[in-house]
Amino acid sequence: MSVPTEQLLVLSALLFSIGVAGFFVRRNVIVVLMSIELMLNAANLAFLAGARHHASLAGEWQAEGPVMVTFVIAVAAVEAAVGLALVIAYYRRKRTVSLDQLTPTLD
Image (cartoon, rainbow, N blue to C red; front, top):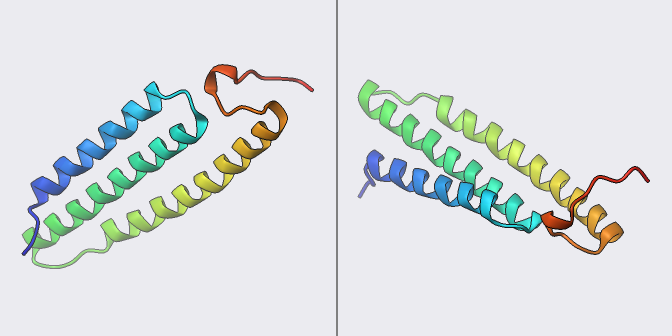
């Protein structure tokens, strides 16, 4: 049994919308980073759904969708590693991960 492409795209749009809402509503840096990850995963799902739809129309499998997903996964891993390292460094200095308390300092 195969899931229709339209349903995959609707799920992708729903996940992306939840990620955008979490990015703009939440005040915790870790939740904001998780929201960005959710948006990247929604883009991955849309890439794969588009690749599968294209393959069903053209009759042959193209590797563009999975290749883009691989690059997005790599970017997400780097974003998570660097973002978490920055959050840990900021927490050690200020003892908070709230975006409301985030102020640039020169020291």
